[in-house]
Amino acid sequence: MRSTRFTLELDSPLGTARAEVLERRGWVVGLDPEAHDVPARGVGEATPLPGWTESHEDCRAALAAFDDRETPSGDERGGGSDDRTNDPDLTTPAARHGITLARADAAARADDRSLAALLADRVGFPEPAVHVPVNATIGDGTPAAAAREARRAVDDDYRAIKLKVGAGALDRDLDRMRAVQREVGPAIELRADANGAWDRTTARQALDKLRRMGVSYVEQPLPAADLRGHQALREELRIDLALDESIAEYGIERILAEEAADVVICKPMVLGGVVRTLEAARAAREAGVEPVVTTTIDAAIARTAAVHVAAAIPDVRPCGLATGSLLREDLVPDPAPVDDGRIEVPTDPGIAGSTFDEIVFEE
Image (cartoon, rainbow, N blue to C red; front, side, top):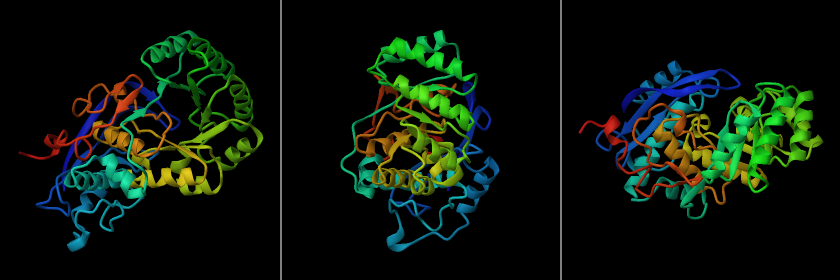
């Protein structure tokens, strides 16, 4: 396996429920037919986010161990599956994402079709979409600042806006949401993301008031470990709940089995691969739960691959894929930029043809 390490600084620090993110560190991995079990060149990205995925040290060790494992032969070579026995396991999801994405990229390139087409075929979905709708995200700030950002988003043709809440007092967050609502009107879908900041009492108050405002769903109102609390909120209040951090805590299978969410936030880097993410989306749909695909503020390779995943989900809701602008610089110019509140899915074979090859393959 070929690999190239990278470090990308964020344009500004990003606060999460677990830590403040200042940079994204990871590896570009490359597989080629001369040395690996793939039918064409394939490129992947492993960018761990400790707290959601394994540590950087464990990711590096899993990638290093990959080359020491037995290489499949015969009819095992070059398939599109990301369930190979010699791939990193799910205790290192970012490493697994990188290796299995490179396999899928190679398989799609060999078939001369996009990654989205390969993924949709793999899980039995219809032809993928040409565009993926995305949401704008507004961070913490004053009500006036939130309204200004919301107006810019609407002017850029975003049809869904997610407001980060939970960093300050609830009344302040409600004022911010009211300001956004007044600015954009009822045609724009509004979402709130608390990143697990509230206790159960605050969450009940918040969800009741946000429901009255017409907010579409509230993401991760309680800490990740409080699955029972999320179940209780769903039973008590008539507003959709989305779970994100809880998926890293429990796994999507348990979230669906416990009926703890109306929406699941599917991060390919956290779930351990693009195929597993699409299979999770299919399972969610079968359970009456809506999947929304987002990134972990990944670099261009994984971010573009996530666009393909979202495109493969029929009638997907606006996804959290407008994250490239959070990086001060990227690996390459963005092959799938946001335009008019949506992203056009690359049609070149694989993720984006040979766009990323020069990063990891020596010519």
